[in-house]
Structure formats: C-alpha cells, structure tokens
Length: 94
Image (cartoon, rainbow, N blue to C red; front, side, top):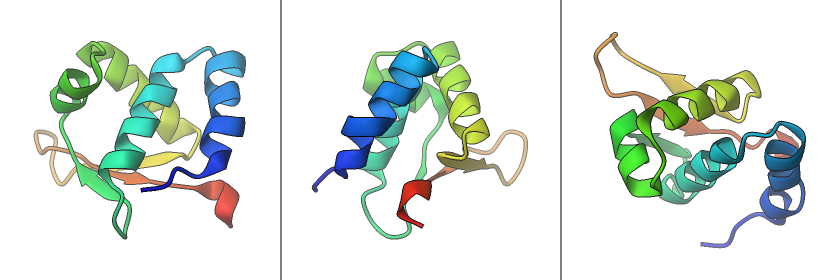
C-alpha cells in the first residue's frame, strides 16, 4: 500500500509540530494502514490500538478524541460497550 504524500509532508508537521500530539499522528498512521480497503474502516478497541502501537490506552483515547475533533477520523459505537468502528477520513482529497 502506498501512503498519500500529504500524510507525511503536511499532516505529520500539523499534528506533531503545531498541535503537539505525536500520538495522534501515530494512531492516524496505524488506522490508515490497517483500514487500507474501501471504505477505510477498522473495528478496533483502544487496547488493541495501544498494544499494536506501543502507546498507552489513555494516549490512544486522547489521540482518537483529537483526530475526531479534527475530522480526520470518525469513531462510531453501536452501544456504550461495543468495540468502536473507526472511519479514516482524508478531507484533503475533496
């Protein structure tokens, strides 16, 4: 899978440098890679993302909140205890 140059050239500097949230960049990159098919969706628990990225569960939760606010990811749960579905968005392609 090829990574969109925008992710490394622009989004990394924006999330890591400007927003000071390197964990958000790591989580976005992880979700982007794991949800490579169409639609770009991945069902993954916070603990699963934490285990796979080496981040803490609380860092993953904070990163996902940030990514959802920035409209880079849309996380949906069928119920309070359900494993969330994360839709990886690419607003720069519109």
